[in-house]
Length: 189
Ligand SMILES: C[S@@+](CC[C@H](N)C(=O)[O-])C[C@H]1O[C@@H](n2cnc3c(N)ncnc32)[C@H](O)[C@@H]1O
Image (spheres, rainbow, N blue to C red):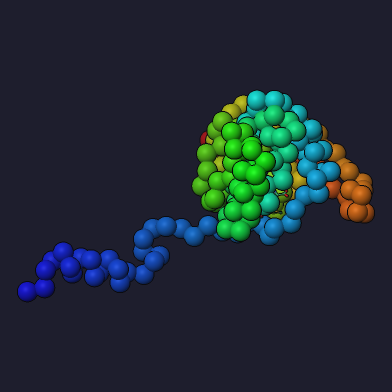
C-alpha cells in the first residue's frame, strides 16, 4: 500500500503556489532615484534629528537611508522589493561601516511595521500613496512626520509644501510634509 506520509508529501508538492496563501508583493512604483540635493532637502524638511528613527518606503539604491544615517545621525531603515537594489544598497551600507545605524529590509512596503518611526519618507505614485495611507494611519504614533516627494496623500492636509524649482538638472520637485495627529488617527476607525 502507498504510505500515507508519501501521499501527503506528493499532494503538497503538486499544489499550485497560490494555494500556499503567500500574496505576491505589488510593485508600487518603478525605480527612479531622488537627486542627492533633493534627498538632503527632504530630510531637512522632515526635521530629522540625531537619534531619531526614519524609514524610506521603497528605498532604491539606499541614498535616503544612507544620508539619514551618515549626515543626520538617524537610525535609518529602507524597505526594498527589488533584489539587485536591496543587495546594492546593503553592500554600500556595509562598505561605509554604517550597519549599526542603517539597514535595508528586503520586502514589501505593505508588510512592515513602522510604529517606531519619527519620520517616513516616500517617493512613490499617487495610487501607491492611497494604498499605504491606511497602514500609516493604523501604525504611526501621534507626531510622526511624513515627507512625500512629488505626490500628495489624498485626504491629508500638508503642514508645509516646498517646491525646489531647479535641482541643478532643470527638474523641479515638490515636497509635502504631513504630521500624524489625533484627527489622522481617528480617520482610521
Ligand atoms: C521612485 S523609487 C524611489 C527610490 C528612493 N526612495 C529614492 O527616493 O531615491 C521607488 C522604489 O520603490 C520600490 N518599490 C516599489 N514597490 C515596492 C514594494 N511593494 N515594496 C518595496 N519596495 C517597492 C522600487 O523598486 C523603487 O526602488
